[in-house]
Image (cartoon, rainbow, N blue to C red; front, side):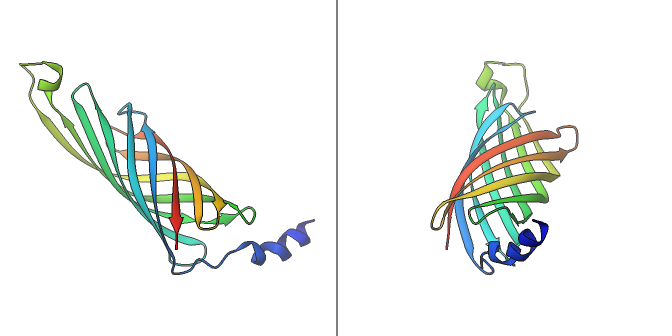
Length: 159
C-alpha cells in the first residue's frame, strides 16, 4: 500500500506554478470577539509553495473596530485530486480602534493600537469545480498581549 501511495504522489500534484487566485473569506477572531470578512490572493511560487496575502475588516462591537493585513506562506500537501492540507506561517499587522462615543461613554478617550504579530496554523482546501475552491483555516496569531485564535472559511477562483 505504501508503494502504491508513493508511486501515485506525482500524479496528485497539479501544475499550479506561476498561477494566481483570488477569493473572499469570513471569520471569527477569539480575543476581539468579532466577525469579519475579507479578500485574499494566492500566488503559487511552486506547485507546493503558495504566497497568500489577505485583508480582513471586522464588524464594530461595543465601540471597537479592527482590521488586519496578513502575508502567509502555505505548503500544499495533496490528499487527493480535489483536496489538500496546508500548514501555514506568516506575518500579521492589525489596527484596533476604540471609540467611546459609540457606547455613549462621554468620559472615555479614543484609542488606536497598531499590533504586529506572527501567524501559525493549518488549512484545508477542496476544489469544488474547475478553478473554484473552498478553504477552511485555523490559525493562532501571536500578538503582544492580544494573541488569539482565528478561524476563517472562504472560496475563491484561480487562473
